[in-house]
Amino acid sequence: MKRLGILLSGRGSNFEAIAENIGRGRLNAEIAAVISNRADAGGIAIARERGLPALVLPSKGVPREEYDRRVVAELQNRGVELVCLAGFMRLLTVEFCRAFPLRALNIHPSLLPAFPGLDAQKQALEHGAKISGCTVHFADEHLDAGPIILQAAVPVLDGDIEQTLAARILVEEHRIYSEAIGIILSGRWRIEGRRVIAE
Ligand code: GRF
Image 1 (tube, helix red, strand yellow):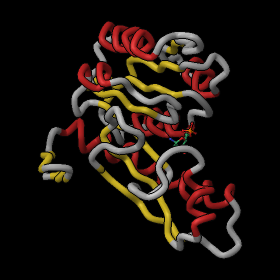
Image 2 (spheres, rainbow, N blue to C red):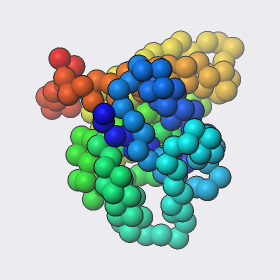
Image 3 (cartoon, protein in one colour):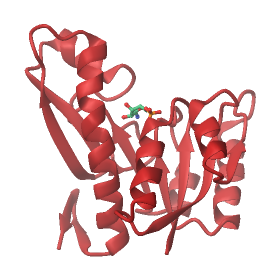
């Protein structure tokens, strides 16, 4: 069984959806580590409730390279094969990416390359987009930028506020993150330039 490492900073609903799918036998993997840079992350409480190995590595005041070295060491010590960023509010260093080449995924609540960065749902609303959604992509050292694995679209409705749009997108996030992890873990994919092609 492939060993996943989850990195998060907050609520942890994407992590929880992954854990649920593993529990239901929909995803053949195990969670070897849940690491947060914030002690108050909801995701850490969820991990502990589920009896999963949870670790807080505070990032405050730690230089980026040093911080990522610590995280990489923890992941490697636990035999993590695929890293899943799930609301991890930090940019990865080049060194991190080299330690997990095409072995780190991220989820973002927009149809990239539209609306990278913070408050993607708010950005979509303010821009007047009629369709938004979410993207699972390989993480690299740039913000929300690596090759796309899966996307799902949702309508932006006239009555939407940030919270209603975010909730509609979140349903799709929870679905496609596990699906994308399944594709990558299956090994039945290849990459041509930036195109990730499931075989
Ligand atoms: C999600 O919207 C995800 O796409 C973004 O951060 C949010 C994390 O939510 N990267 P949660 O912590 O998984 O509930």
